[in-house]
Length: 316
Ligand SMILES: NC(=O)c1ccc[n+]([C@@H]2O[C@H](COP(=O)([O-])OP(=O)(O)OC[C@H]3O[C@@H](n4cnc5c(N)ncnc54)[C@H](OP(=O)(O)O)[C@@H]3O)[C@@H](O)[C@H]2O)c1
Image (tube, rainbow, N blue to C red; front, side):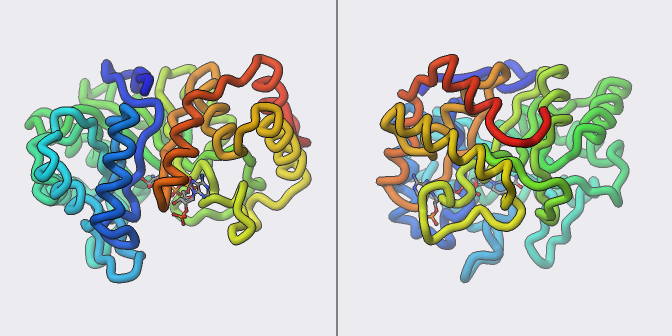
């Protein structure tokens, strides 16, 4: 699998990052191992989990995904071949949604212990905690980084102006700064003011900011849970609009020209942007995994890329 530079860091990461959100809760150990093996066999090495995954799934309390990954690393003896990302800041009761310094320090130790590793490759601030000064959170991350607990720092669910604020603080203090951002991003564009609770969708503002500052965007929920191809799933009211109808029509047209699926075209479209966007790949079975991994063989023509970029009714 081809690799891409991760934002302002010196790390090279797989073009598709495997999301482990349901591993160890909704997905059994057997299925999770099978999907991890399949992804690794395709040359992938970039894994994404979080301390809270996934307390909202049936039987979940949080920590199950990291724990399952820890077992996998031990059983396969392959920690050194992998680039592991995890996150802190989103609740898993009774741990609150917070980026207070003490919480970050404690949660980092718990994540390391659950995964049985000494150092996290990429540690994300999972949310924007407006109740804690950014200086406090960034100071705690810097302490952990200096202690060798993680290598690179990422943000998730922050608006562009908050990213710039964080950047200014890190630059002035000489402390570690965010090298990339993981945000909600798909081919359809959400309606203005669409509510995703603590999740933040990508805006043109953020895209521009990332391009100017050299940060990589990582896209979560790129396939809208399968809604592009499955009659049992819907994009939801946040995406119901003439703009979405117009974009869906172009997406389907391009997919048909390439004899590909809309899901595959979406991954290819993200990776073909002038500043490539790394999709979070998540699947429920081996067949979906194969379909999604095969998107890496898809080549959009300049005309197809342009049509996909320009589709829609929203003013650019
Ligand atoms: N930073 C954040 O705040 C945040 C938030 C959400 C997620 N994430 C990360 O992003 C990752 C991906 O998020 P997501 O699960 O929301 O992504 P998604 O791409 O929107 O949805 C993935 C789901 O879509 C379905 N699917 C995938 N490929 C398919 C195919 N070829 N055909 C039909 N259905 C298909 C599967 O559903 P079924 O499994 O139900 O079949 C799969 O689990 C997560 O694992 C997590 O690591 C981060």
